[in-house]
Image (cartoon, rainbow, N blue to C red; front, side):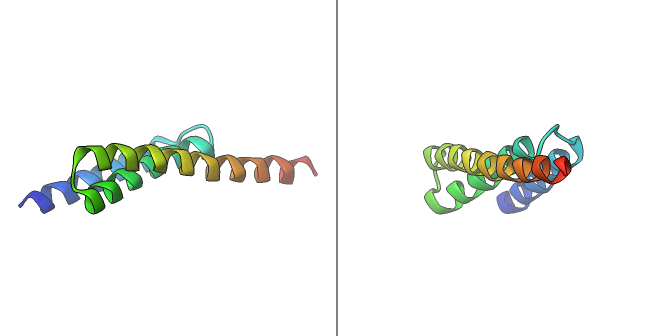
Length: 79
């Protein structure tokens, strides 16, 4: 029963994140990375510390990837 509630929470949170429309791909990447990292941290570690660490690492990685995509977009629009 807990897994069903967790799955429902994840789906609802993901849809909210995707439909909010952040200003940049870096912000979107940070949000998606934090959510994914938190889920993976909880699945692997099974405790709150792992969840927080996973969210932090995911947010940093997602923001870095998003920033790279923003940089590519800025270069493509210059020409």
